[in-house]
Image (cartoon, rainbow, N blue to C red; front, side):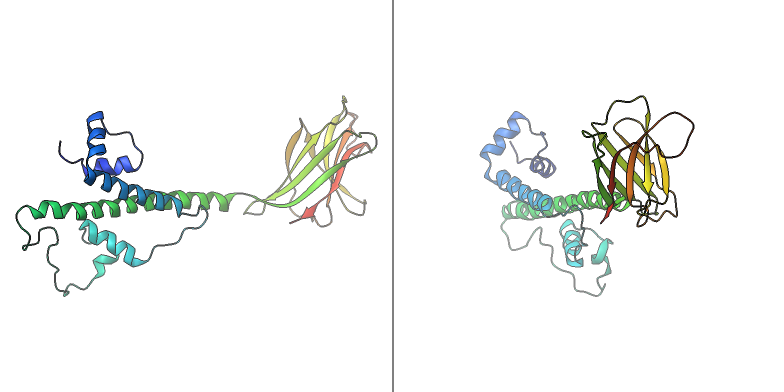
Length: 254
């Protein structure tokens, strides 16, 4: 059978199951097609292995010039800005000095090179989009600015907890707490920020389950209200702290 189509060779290099039994047999016996797949596979491996998921560098203009030149494109990228007065180059696809049977054989290395450039350009575009999305997500993700280990009070020796303060890019802050091993009680649990001199406190809300997230009011100075407390509170209509703290810890800032 004739050589495999270049597009199919590129898909095989990418790992796509596109070859029939007959085509796989041809690939196993045809040195030219195997060499082309080998070069394309190398391009795939290099492209996938050299992209950092958090940093994306723009390629130099000569890379895109080379892609445009190899693919025979016009009016694209930096190559389109070349001076119109430049002397035309001879057509490399069919040299006049070659014997009649030579052009077809000579075209295979050039066709292979052309597909390597095309595959590399396609992979670069896909990986660039993926890296851009990753960076965009990272920019939107809230940043942890403070943490605390919450230690148990003597009446609740098996309890322990953690607290994390996250700040969004727009400045909203959220306190996320977890609580493990607290004593069983019919009373509900409340989350507090307490001023470090003990003179004032702010209720953030009721903790339902083992973890919860709570918005920190604007204007609260966490360098002053740096104690995180979780307490049992009786259902008695009294909004003040019951004095029955389960765990407490001081925030450490990043």
